[in-house]
Amino acid sequence: MDDTQTARAEIMAQWLTQVFDGAAFSTAALAGDASFRRYHRLSVHTPTGEQRYIVMDAPPDKESVSQFVAVDELMTGAVHVPILIAVDEAQGFIVLEDFGGTDFADVIHSEGGTADAPTAQRYREAMQVICQLQQIAVAQARAIVPDYDDTLLRREMLLFSEWFLPYIGVAFDDAHFSSAHWQALQDAIIAQVSAQPQVVVHRDFHSRNLMILPQDLGVIDFQDAVVGAYSYDIVSLLRDAYVDWSAAQTDAWLNEFFALVQPQLPHLTKSQFELDTMMMGLQRHLKILGIFVRLYQRDGKARYLANLPRVLQDTLIETRWLASSQGGVFAKFDHWLNTAVVPAFRQTLAQSQP
Image 1 (cartoon, rainbow, N blue to C red):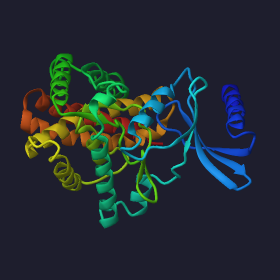
Image 2 (image 1 turned 180 degrees about the vertical axis):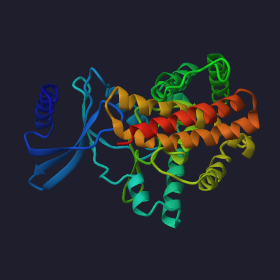
Image 3 (image 1 turned 135 degrees about the vertical axis):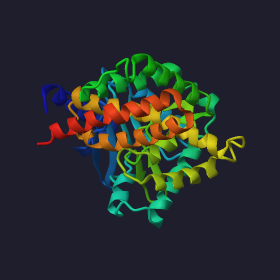
């Protein structure tokens, strides 16, 4: 622990002493996420026994807890988000309900990673949570969360060209896939996803952000929620960077989700739903390819590199489908990915092996 972290820990301890009226307590650091936030499991020792909580430590110069608090309040009642026990926005600390240590991914892997009845039921429960999120009034949400607008969609896709491509040593070129083609691809994706029905979007709805609770699923890491395309969260869940399912299984669950949302979107056809999820998936996976490299190169979080092959695999599924159905710049992009990007990526992986 460096001097800054030590000082931060002392400030947190002083605050917790005030929150719990001087009761004895202990903390244990938990694995962090892809942000600057740090988490601790807190055990408070009282005359009636031990009480357990989670402490979020978000240094104010790096993160703001105010959005977390606002989105938690927005989602409370619709889905199971943590109860807030104590908040200090100025210092960047929150004590919140402890959802335990078992996430969706842990259980899937412990069950053998097969789509048996218990696993399939868990996915149905997660789909229901998405539907519940989508019932939150958009007008109410817009007072708290931003729109997933053109600027944000484009900024995210640029992570692919600014981080992933340099990492594998590939650049756009006029002969195969130019900067103009890249611009046209972004424009086409943005136009399509912006025209989709708009709902409350968690924006990181995957197996590591769903906690297994006795009665339901707990939802965490929701502070980056937006109002955006209805297809976003289901793509996050079913084309998850951390869990590997076959295309056939993913398609089967997508069909189940279509049946769930179709009553709320009566004009939505199956073919439109398929286009929506493929287009949204491509936008998301271009972003993630860049984010995982940035987490490694800028933030020193090398563990995310192990998930790049899975993300690229999903990207190729989407570009193949879009190349066939939409043609044009999507076909050009798909060809370039397969002939230039994939070989360079494989070479980069081979060179990085010990």
